[in-house]
Length: 311
Image (tube, rainbow, N blue to C red):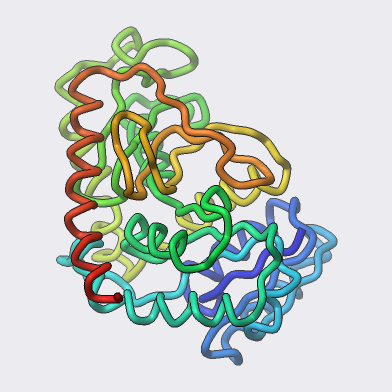
C-alpha cells in the first residue's frame, strides 16, 4: 500500500510519516509539500533510519505521487494559535484546502483511493472533501476525534496510575469545542470506570476539560502538536491497510446515525480497506446523545456559512 501525505514537510505530516514508518505496515510512504525541498529532506531523514525499522519505499515530492496512491492523507494547513478555536481557522484554511482538493482531483487519484483529512477544522473540511472530490462518500474520512480519544485515554490512565493501553474510552462529535465524552462505556482493564480503585465522579469534569484543551496546551508549550497526531493518523491508516474492520471515532458524512444528517462528525465507525464500512449507533446515555446532536447542529451552522463562501 502507498500512502501520500500532503503537507509532509510540516510537523504533523512528518510525524505521521515517521509513525507509519515505525509501524512497518505500509509499503510506500510519499511526503508531498508545497516546499518540496523540505518534503524531500524529511523523506531522506526517514530513509536513513529505514534499515533499523522496515523495508519500505520512502520519497518526497509533489502531486505526481497521487495517481498511484492508495491513501491520500491531507495534513497541510495553517497552524492554530493558542487562543484560537479550530473553527476560527475556517477563513484562513478553507481557501488553501479547496486548492489542495482541486490539485488532488486534477492529478487523477485512483477511484479506489481513500482520502484522510487531518487539516483543521477537520469536520468542516471532511464534508467539503466528500462533496468536492467525486469519490464515493465512504472513501472520504477525517481524523475526527481519534486524537481526542487517545488524549482522553492517556489522561485517565495518568490520573488512575493505570496502564494506558488498558484504558478504553471515547470522545465523539466535533473535533473541537462541542466534543462529547462518552463516560457510559469507559473501562479500565475491562472494569467499568466507576468500579476501578481510586475513581470518583468528581474527576470527570477535570479530565474532560483538560482533554478538550489539550491541543491548545501543547501549542502553548511547544508551538504545535505532532507526535500524538502522528500516532492517531497511523491508527486510522493501519486500520485501512490491514482491513481491520475496527471501530474508530473518525469523522465522515452522517446521514441518520443518532438522528444526525448532512454533516461530518465522529460517531463509532467501522474502518477497513474501503474506508468507512459502517456507522454504529451504540447505546449511549441520553445526555450523550443530546450532546452529539448539539455538536451536529453547531457544525451545521458553520458549514452553511462555509458553503456560501466557497460556492
